[in-house]
Image 1 (cartoon, rainbow, N blue to C red):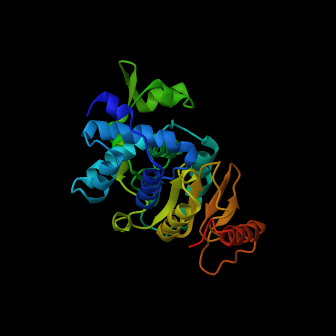
Image 2: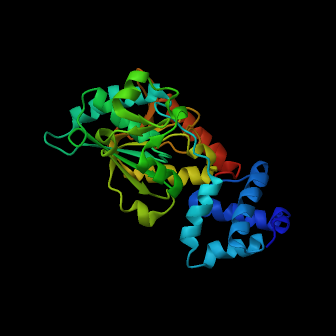
Image 3: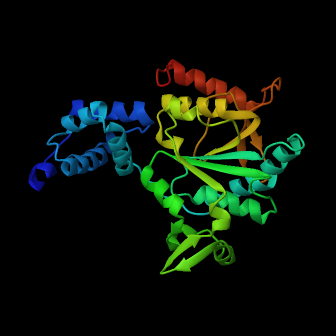
Length: 311
């Protein structure tokens, strides 16, 4: 196929709906009319590279071809933007290390396992590595006091996370002395130290894939920050249901500052900590009668009634 032919590829209305529904159902990615051009442009790149000739041929390849899972990973890399940096939304991470972690350790049975922390949608690794650095700086011992799991759907960013090599832009919120302590500089890039790197376990995980999710044990803390903001309401509910199932009672869920569960679920309580707001899964028998739950239940009823959140 010539470059001219590939440049002239245009998604029809039917093809747009097919791909939109496919990506929403398979991995939760949501594409509205405002992102149609972006979807068209990036899918055309894959059609051109695979020399398939049409969007429809590519769609059926994703649905039926034996290599579909591998190609799905490739196109997800094309469609997702993974922009992050170390110590992002620092107040929340300070609340995790300074308030949540001590509470969970105090509640832990003597000699029990370390506190399990899952960074879901970890992108290129800045978030889980930040957690390890901050916890170590606070005097906690990885493997004894806490352990960190990290997952993402993109193979490309997971490869970068495992390498642990970063450009200066990743350190926009990092104090120079912290950067020098935990990283080694070489040729304008910074390599994270093995003392931090070895304490994060990375895996590729689709939050809508029950077969892979079943491999995860229960967690004490889940961070999924600046991820569900890109999902529609039904997908948000699916993912939050997964987190509720995977969280221990009394465990914590940390979302991005622009994200809320107000019209998604009332299964969590909104906890006001000194440094930030977080969600907590109540212990058995705890009452949830605070004003936030009343507002959440009302918002869910409105969402369900107008049809945007019908199950």
